[in-house]
Length: 251
Image (cartoon, rainbow, N blue to C red; front, side):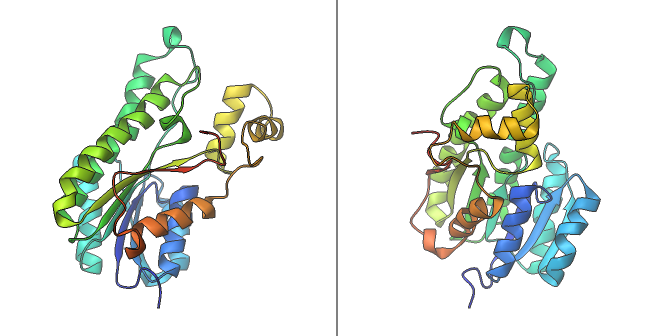
């Protein structure tokens, strides 16, 4: 028996590195999963190897109707909802606050904060008692760095959102937590590191490795393992928590 047998999950950012790894890990543990993202071709590439256990939907997480449709697909196709993973996110500008684009700041908050809010809004209305919701924050949702006002603000903001939702969901046994990955070996992080350092990818990776006490980037599968735990009944008494998955960066 799998750890998630009989459970149904909804994942935003499902075509990206962490979302895709989480979908694969949950299906391997017996779940059925709906993945949502903007990139139809990438969604198909993730979903097709998972067969009937995975459905997909094109979804802009800043659009309430589209998020509601994604949650609705999980319920209609698989019979309910037990876990929602608000994982979609963007990085935004890298510039001092005095030079930071207002439009870029607002866009980051729309995707990284309004997006999880809409997942909570629609998933909490549909989720079965005893269900679970996770939101992807970041190590910079626990710390900060120069030049990333939009991103850091958004990743701190979802912690407050999570805490409200954890208290509101508790009466039905619905747990809500944030995960805080440090640098993950993927294309998203490579772009962030090139922008932050001005160095080519390999050199930028080495610079970031030097800032991580464990001395390396995480693999997406390592983040997915924490997601499976939060989706499972093993975390039935865990809510309102900030899970650091950062190799020690936030120590």
